[in-house]
Length: 192
Image (cartoon, rainbow, N blue to C red; front, top):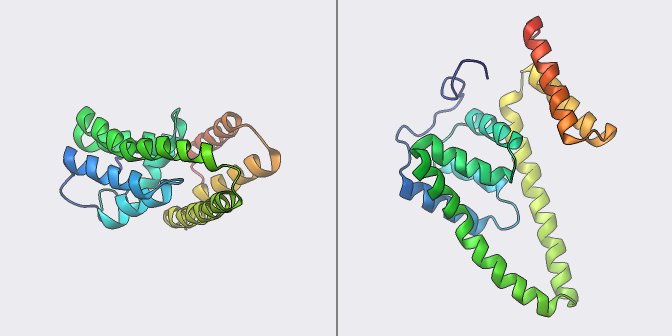
């Protein structure tokens, strides 16, 4: 990312008025309500396409940063977006909004599932949910890929990530260190 800010690297226009704490809470609460089982695809839709709080590039860069942090990516993203717009209060509001409804739902479903886990219909229901979540994840990956078209360095990094993780089976930390080192080397050599 260098010395430029997220705003300077954006390719599409974000909303000019930043959200307040209430909007952050409600936005992430709605996201938590409808995104059971896989929030990342819906986060992109909410943050970039519907509310336009972030551009495609900002979302991708912020998500990349959140992947380096410990914890769940979407939780890190909620905190980062909230903090970016409203500081600590925004971060807390976005996080509470994101976690409120899913926490209640998970507690209720765990109680129900304990009583009906042997039911074949319930098992098929969960298989269907997994397939839908996979489809949403693939769709989001394709949308996030768009800003990298034409960026050779980014495309090489993506290919190397897939190669290291899927075929070589490098641990995540080793993959990250390798790719950061590679990108630093590419930057120093000014390869494009």
